[in-house]
Image (cartoon, rainbow over all chains, first blue to last red; front, side, top):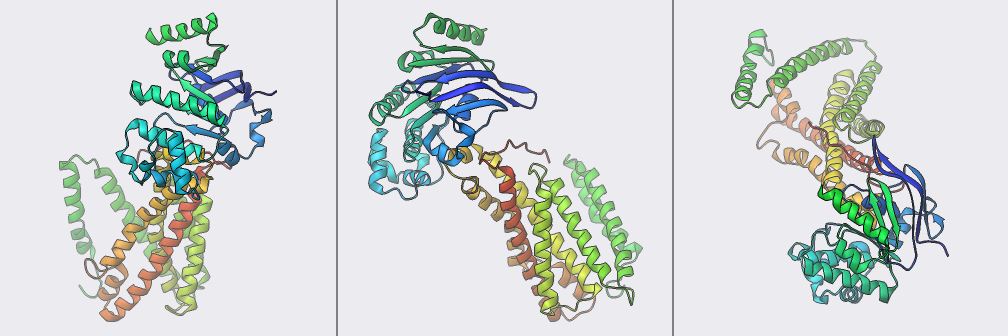
Length: 233
Length: 260
């Protein structure tokens, strides 16, 4: 069985800056993969390659065994949804926001989707500006779910949330994985989150893959400790 | 002084207000003195050249082909100006050239096809200049605002792209804002015409002794054409910029804001 994503010798450069340096890594199917690394390590860049918001300078990326560049980018992005670090709400109500993802979505379907992300269905008529950070992030998640993705790319989705909201969102996403069978790739630099969530861990440092494998492996602990040490120094 | 005659003393006197502007700029540390002086000198030099060119073009027996050639030159210069003023939009020059050429063909077609003015050098060059000059401002603004909107709202645009929107869909709300911003001054100016200010062509005609009502009719025709031309070119440039600011696989290019 092919992997969810396979990165083969992938580099990303911007001018003279190397963001990702010849990264070769596999993201397995059926495992919740966490990408960890300090700021600027290339973890978000790696994630953005998965739905072609960015493309590699060299190397190849496979999605379920198919070259990503051979797929229609618009169809790919609906199959591989993304939730960003800062919740991005467009103007108007929650209902308006959900309609951006699917203009034909019925009110019943939107209410069901809000329930799925553990938001009250009567939130539909609320204006986006009135929502808390946690609620806004859940609306973003609901909006992405309306595209019926098979994969969710989560780019530090809890970074702007307080601890209780962080845990709640983690539980929601893990629930989605169990009930809807959605594959999750989650970016973080929170060690606690790795311990709570990761089935598979990829650690990046300065654009290179430092570790890939089980989070329980002592080498994973050493890689994370190295990051912690360098960030603290 | 007679009708529209300005001698050297009159011209010098008119510079008093430039002096006032320089004093304000210096006093308020706006650092606009150099630009003000450069703009004043450059405008004078350009107008002098234009005066001689017009005199040459208007000589009896001169072919109007030269006047049309001059208009072509103005279109190319205007497109080049758009390129220089909106450098963050890659490949904007051909878009601006096509937009300005198309609107010029339509506008001049209406003016001369419907005999609003006779097709002669004294009408072709000034009218062409007015259309292009007025469109150029809106066009530059449309291109720059489109780039700025997409840069400022990058996170929103990418959130839309991540939902499977095409670049045209994802950029639509922002290019719409940009076009509205570009056209608002032109629309406001049309709304205030006659109440707050007297437009240039009309003022010129009245100063030259033409009956004010006739001058108003000429100005109205010109204003409608300017508004139509500015709207057409702004929309084409806005949509053209949108296409240029995304890649063919619907990714938003990295945009670097210009300092000016």
